[in-house]
Every structure is written in structure tokens, then in C-alpha cells.
Length: 299
Image (tube, rainbow, N blue to C red; front, top):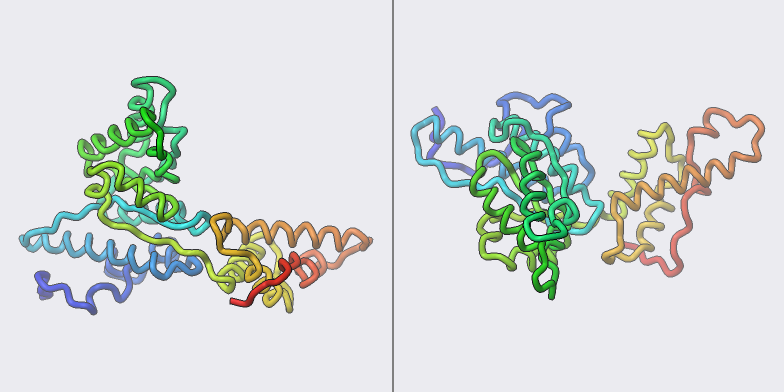
């Protein structure tokens, strides 16, 4: 029998999917789909750690051992377009498999969904959104907008206070994930003493590398029935290298825009052909890649 009082390094995760079911994970398993996502190595490791903690806690409970107190609420920090919403959805599915959540649905909310226009309206809106998330995950993007700087008597604080009370009253029914830029989320968590204690675990999402963005472009093109032809990869990397990694950098959203641009350029290129071939229609050529910005620097 395994000694469940001791968690050895090799037990931490040979594969997180196997820790859920004890067998090889099917292709539609949420952990398998998370593993198939491009990049996000640190995010995947953090989720695997959470799964292993929850699974081990269940084994300890079954063995009559003390179970550590675990919080399933999370803070996702990082720039937009890095897969935070997708990971939140998969996390809800994983927790449903583990029996932590009853349904695992993802309910997305922003400031406009939670903050009302008059006294009392905010608490009502927040309760309604929270109720829709019962049994699943409430994902609040740009959560820091609930506590803007210099806001005075802003109703956003009422939303935070209401949310904290609901999380306490229904602690085993809803998992809350708050997300946003790193610095702003630190300020948000510091705005209320109860926030940091409710969200002890943070997962950082970083910008995709140029190579990862090229892979995303290829995958999205394939899903649309296109193929990136020979020579497109280096030009795509050069294009992504040319774009500053500042707050406006769109990551996967930028990759999607590049695919749409390439498809548009291909359509213009083929407009002069009376009868384009199947390959003409299917293959995206280097000529379809947007031009890199002047002064691009290799990464």
C-alpha cells in the first residue's frame, strides 16, 4: 500500500491526467487538452500541482488522515491573448472530474456585469452573476477595474465586498478566478484584506515567443482549411520579432489577426486567376505574410 502521509517528488506528477483517473487520459480529457495547448509550460505545471494536491487530499481523507485546507480560487496574471479564459474553462472541467464542482460551467464577468448605477444595484448584480456560476467557475477578467485608483465612493468596492461574502457563504460551490495585468492585480489584491486570503495562489501567463506564435498561426490556418507553404515560417517569425512586447501586444489574438490578414492577401493575389487550383486556394505563400516593421530585432 502507498504511504499517503509522505508526498515524494516523483509522486508530484508523472502525468496530471493519470492522477485524476488512474489510467491514460482520453483525447477529450481537459488535462489532455491543456497539455496540447501551445506554450504555457509554467501554467500547465501549476495546474498539475493543483490537481495533485486535490487528489492527494482525497486519498488522505479516505485513509483517515488530516486533510490540509486548500483554496481552489485563483489569480491569473499577465497580458491579454495568453489563454487565460481557455485555461479557466479547462480548470472548471478538471474540478468537475475530481468531484470538487457539481457542473463546471464557466461564467465570464467584467466590471459592467457586476457594478450597478445606484446604491444597492451592485450587490444585486453581483449576486445574480454569482448565482449563475454556482457549481462552476466565475471568471472575472480585468478584476482590478473593480477598485480603480482615486475612485472615491465607487460602487466597485461594493461588488468586491459582496463577492467576498458570497465566496464565504458558498465556499464549496463556486471557484472564482480573477485575472488581469500583473501590476494592476497586485494593487487589486492589496485593496482589501480579505482578497489576498481568498486568493492565495497565483498563476502567471507570459507573452508567447515568436516561435510559439508561428505555431499558433499554422494551427489556426489548418483549422480554417489552409496550409502555410514553404518559406512562410521564417517570415512569420520575423514579423512577430518586429512587434514590441508592450501592453498592446495581442499574443494569440495577434496571431489570429495575422491569419486573417494572410487569407485576405491570398484572396487579392488569386483575384487575377480565372480558375485557381486546389493548391492555389489552400496554400498561403510567403507573399501573403504581412511585412515586418522596419528595424525588426531578432529574438
